[in-house]
Length: 607
Image (cartoon, rainbow, N blue to C red; front, top):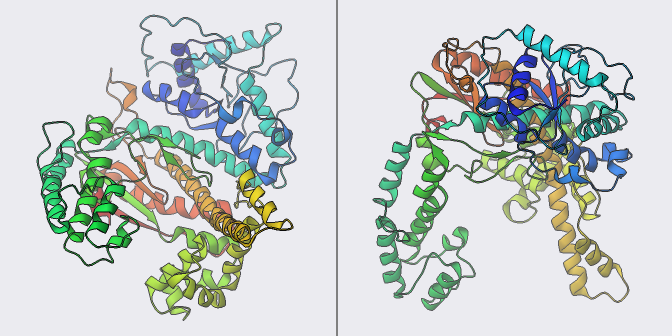
């Protein structure tokens, strides 16, 4: 059955009360339309994101989906403006967070009536109907029961029509269900697919709601740091011009250009400074009058480039920053961002993130998330005991493995990221003696990568294999007559890929934990009633304005924008959702996932 966009929105508003699970090709293509009309979606299946997981996972390697040639689902385009088709609905046993529909059998000859779950599959192949001019905004007070009954009649009629075509989304959905059902561990992969899809909803909601941002405060901090905003395009702010004068005077070079790394290296060498780059760590080890103003120039230049006036003009609209998240945008499953630098907000600009009047931010940070994930993955009971009821790094010190908290942190980062030289390399043997199971786990993952093998996260996201160039180098090094230089390059490439797989299992599982945390919290926040109902005639697009909602996400940190009176309840939900995420992924493992919570009126006060 083909719907116009106005009918699609109306249908969604009617069906949401029945707790449906929407099935569509891309949440980012469809959900913004519903939110703009004031319709919040509880659950969905994002076929594009799920396809990527199922195709690469070792848990589903034997499935039809994984063995099939690459098709359009690997790079599914955004289907903006496409019509919507409603295939046969299916019933749910009850609305839970991570329940999944069973793999459908062959299509039934007689369709069932509209049930508690409606699988809505938009099909981008069928030409769209011409949109109606000025479609009316759905009345939120309209009877949902009447709307649902009318829509059910239309669905039944459409499904009884002869030769009713099945949309490609429904065929892909069934293929994915078969792949998940036949997985070597169906429960793990099902949880991952559900969490990934729930995360896609949260990402769109955060972009829609926006992060409260004071343009006036941002402009003020820029002027304090850089001087007045330049009136001529392409000119440096006053503070940068002053620092440039100091740099050139100290180097005795009127042409020194700190904005060009290559030219700056030449200027530094002409001044007698032996440098190979302009990286901060290298410059900090040099004693010369030009270095302090140069380091300050680089810091302020980064601020101007990343979050200066141009960023403010582009990304902050009506005192809201609308981040564009890309769920699954990193191979480990971590999110990426598309423009705006949502995942790289420097501390210097966080004072511009100011809660609305009568509201506060509840900011939660998962403490030592990746080391705790490693503890649970490996089953290292000694490390679990070190972090039980306290800071994990303090517990490592208390065990006698290392002498300071800084060394504990450095050693664990080295273990997870492959830091086998320098100070972290010196600390690693001590950690291996104290926590052999945990260290052996990442060492095994590294050896798998060095051999060109795949590793898999707790829930089933698998790493890619090295590319052909890597494999060709390994083959060349193993061949008769290979030079020592070729063997050295091959060993270096193998160690590099081993560092990737070493971290993949930890970072990828941490990303899964964060998805479960977000999903659980999103469900919990919606149980908090809004402070006041929508006034008559108010646009329903303000669905988040009167209730606590996710506003920002940064790997292991969540920021909730909430009416002040709900701050305590939100804090409780944040902690309980973190504990739930741990149980979902690791069951009864004796590993805690504590979160630190701060209630503040501006983001910079959270730490």
